[in-house]
Length: 127
Image 1 (cartoon, helix red, strand yellow):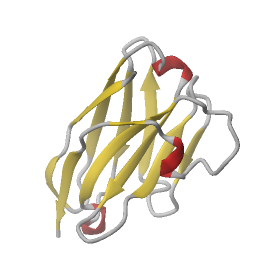
Image 2 (tube, rainbow, N blue to C red):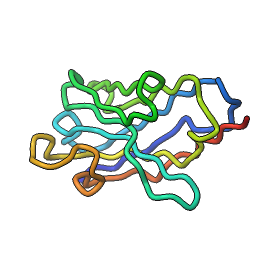
Image 3 (spheres, rainbow, N blue to C red):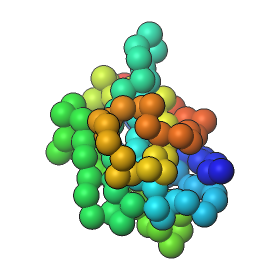
């Protein structure tokens, strides 16, 4: 079992930066791929970023590529999402999620492959 707790959300202006954190409990963090998803009001949850267990490979949605960076610190059981040049369309609840079978087949941005989810943190970007 893995429990995930996100933090770092808030209200910012367009062009500002934020760093989200997600702390995991449980023994499988270092062997799990970690992902960030987001859900805006009235929209479906969408993939944002993913990082492999060792942190060597990362993947991003086209909408955030070049602006967001996902990293992890396995010694601290923490995954981060650095968000730069924020836009109003980035407004959403952001969730971190753990994929305990990172090398299984299937799309890496499919939310169904992530077994564990945090409660979410709100990010609001004003124009």
